[in-house]
Amino acid sequence: MLTLKNPNGLAKAVVVLLAGNIFFDVLLGLVDVRNLIGGAWGYAEPPTFAGADVYVLYSMSFTLFFATGVVFIIWFHRLRKNAEIWARDLQTRTPGYAIGCWFIPLGNFWIPRSIAVEIWRASRWEPYAADGKRELTLLNSWWVCWIIGTLVNWISGKMYGAAETAEAYVIATQWSLVGYVLDAVAAVLAILVVRRLTSMQTAKATGMIPAAQ
Image 1 (tube, rainbow, N blue to C red):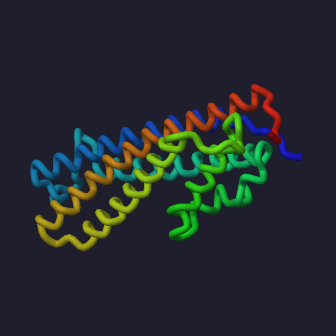
Image 2 (cartoon, one colour; image 1 turned 90 degrees about the horizontal axis):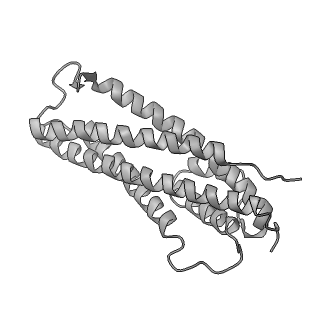
Image 3 (cartoon, rainbow, N blue to C red; image 1 turned 90 degrees about the vertical axis):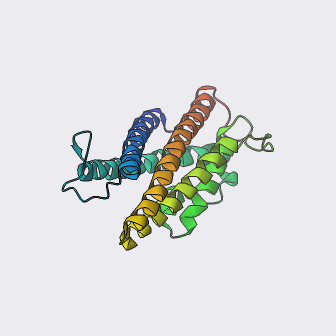
């Protein structure tokens, strides 16, 4: 028998971790701005920013990003399990997909979003009602921003790998800076999505709404 799981603790952890990601996005974005203005392309060994080793900052940022992904997926899976109780027939994929979908090549560009939409519908007061006007705007904005940011970061990484001239480094750094801006915006939107979905499920659970409506 399925039982509701409280997502509040995980949601708070995700929000804190996302806030940390925003901090590093801003910090590393400033590194890119410094490089673009001052023409610093890594000739100093080791490169520093505000007295900190830039390579250490990159390592810390990646570690935090990885930790955020793990906790976010656990939170996402918990919400999907709760959605199973309220509106199982609206869920087109098993709860396991709430974890596995993030690791499916290409499929991870659209499957997580479709699962999130189904969770959203199951978590609202009337799961079977038609979507309200602009109801999914927040969720869709987060997803589009995250996808575009992911692609921009991938492109900037390829550019850095192929760069052999100062001009090539400038272009790669410009793309990198755009990627950090998109990452920061996506993280802010993700915080809003996490808070909204968690609030919806908490209100529904504490309001003792029937699982089947």
